[in-house]
Image (cartoon, rainbow, N blue to C red):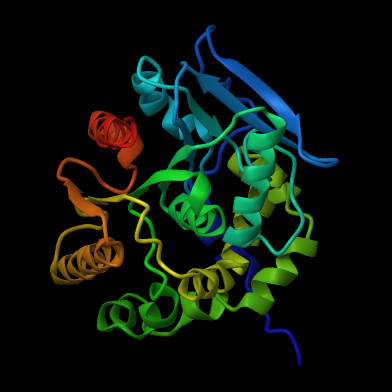
Length: 307
């Protein structure tokens, strides 16, 4: 099968809109935090923890983000329990990881990290955006170690199949350029390309870009994994959806927002014990825009878990 050509300028425009983490940015943690790079088998992942108590709260960031995105939430929870944020493989101060970068692999790496960092279960996991995929995979792989989940604007596993067929997407991308780029063969081939020039232009580490592309290339497989996992009736879940428009106003913006809200409600309904919350004053970056809302949701789950 011949590979499809890809416009490098078009690729650059796509990459330029992602909030890549900068290697020069200092860690956000206070002096009381314990930030460590942990060996998970010849590779190191960066994790930083605050506070004491159980269950341990684990925070997983969005595509293109880093543990820095959780700084307000982490500090706000530190007086309640132990709370840890980490950089997935290829992000922040963590080493790149092997492919395919699917949510089940990422969840397994996280479990190894918890073991090597001597952080025993149970875990209450919060995932923002693609991080929500990963913590859901963790709950399916390790249900007896999962005290609860908080999903912040997490994708719905049916989105990858239906997104490009919606009327809103046809209007937004009438020539199919974005769908063309989404091809897993194209994305997978990018892992062999030297992305350092793009990284320098965007002020980011090349490893971060490799991590982004690897996770996008594995997104469809991650969706299949989540569809194949049985839903766990005993894991309580809180779904938090953004309330502000992420695109400029108009009919298309309203349609996309309505579709997203509908999918978020459906995601919550798939779990027996669930709550659904709209972050009325947030766009997609809920942990940064409304950290107090996230903190309150996590604290409520902690209280429900503790005897």
